[in-house]
Image 1 (tube, rainbow, N blue to C red):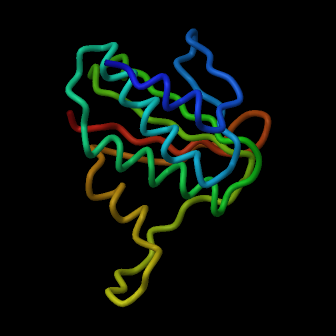
Image 2 (cartoon, one colour; image 1 turned 30 degrees about the vertical axis):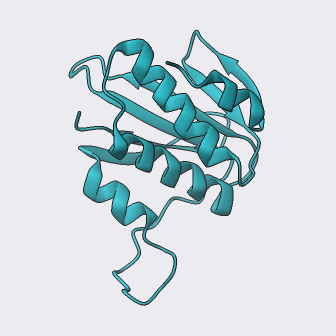
Length: 140
């Protein structure tokens, strides 16, 4: 069952069914709303709710919240060639995410390492109006 009630409680600004996107306020509530959005899309597609996908979207949105700028746009769609789910997270910052060296005593800095380990592929592309989109292809 979709978790729309969770999305309404979060800090959603708007959703756009034509592009399968959600626009979130940059806040601590954004990762939870993004996970619920991803779960809803997977439910609609008949795809098993994927722990890796929820972790990846959570990490990308957290990265945008902590290091990006402006509203956070989350898109979930299927790759035209492979049919695999793709997650894109946009923000207005030009700063690209960084794969930090492994540090086993640090309490942060592991997000993109997890994305790198779990995604079939990932990358960053600039947006025409400024900012960036960080994308990850899920291996489901």
